[in-house]
Length: 290
Image 1 (tube, rainbow, N blue to C red):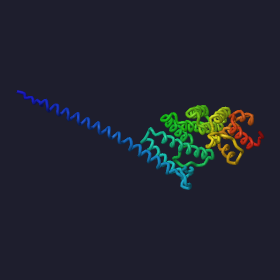
Image 2 (image 1 turned 180 degrees about the vertical axis):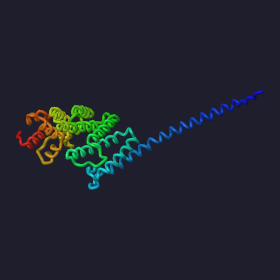
Image 3 (image 1 turned 120 degrees about the vertical axis):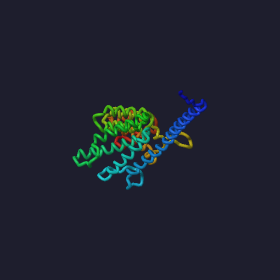
Image 4 (image 1 turned 30 degrees about the vertical axis):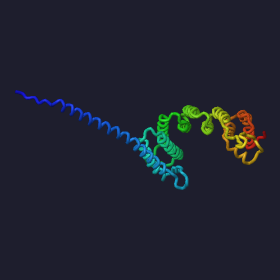
């Protein structure tokens, strides 16, 4: 005669409840661990990032800058790259880490390219200029993937393409995107126009100089008492103010990019007294009477 042991119904329910409770606690712990790990990973990544930047800081200056590359500093560059890569791995959505990696690889690529041109020995383990540029490109593209509307990243990628003559069209495309990200930024427009000059694309440089002259208002002098702008007599302070303006830079870019010089620069002068005075000061600096 067979005997079957039946588990009471309330015991079955209890066992099921225990399993469900255990599963719920496990899921909860995993969720809590994931939530906690995000800030921890973020803080650790930030710490490693600043550690790498401090490692590359030039100790001979009182401000934060990057040490020049030489046979001795290359060792520290290698360590910094390793630390920054760990930071990027910990916080893969941090575009700033990718941009910094791109900057360092570009510096290494530029230094190595000079050494290669001079046929000078390059320390073992240092990337070739081509390999360094390729890594810089990859990190910049990654930064842009994470932050596609960042004009500085597109500008940096355009400059990197420009450094490689075979990618001139790609440089042009990135510069266009950079300008479109912040079309009313005089600083960005100046950088884009200057880059076109370096590329030898004079028509594009002139076009951006013309836009720069239209969007800049830094040359105006406002009277806080009257709330208006009036052009007084030409004082050294006024000349210095106008000379530091983006409008003055627009004239300089247009001068370099144009063919007719004086006539072409005159075409982009805004119709107001301050712009006209800035134009006169610019032309005097070029030795041309207006």
